[in-house]
Length: 149
Image (cartoon, rainbow, N blue to C red; front, side, top):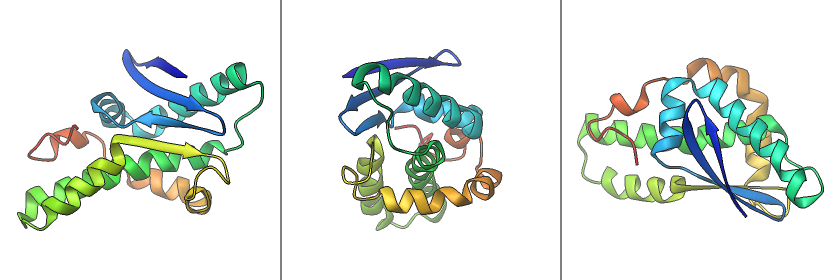
């Protein structure tokens, strides 16, 4: 089931499915991370966790912090690869860039058993306060391509 949420006047698109969801890693998500990656990742997560039980009749069994760091992981992996490509100019980074952008275009977030990477995001989630301290803002203005997918 596709649902759109409005956060700070920006529409975020989420596809819900049994035991998970898919967040569109598009321009709108980048714009929200531009403004405030910590606050807006929390807002997205709150909306997702509030909506899921209304449609599926049960809570999504994923911790909020795990969802938040997964959103950051995908957006900032793409950001850093674009930044390195633009600053260093190595042609071989184009292939890595395409791979990361493909993986970040749709962020699959699922429960244990439905998402092979859930263990990783759950482990990384304990570092959320440290990660949040280092997240850059205005990411789309720091890459030559504008960074925005």
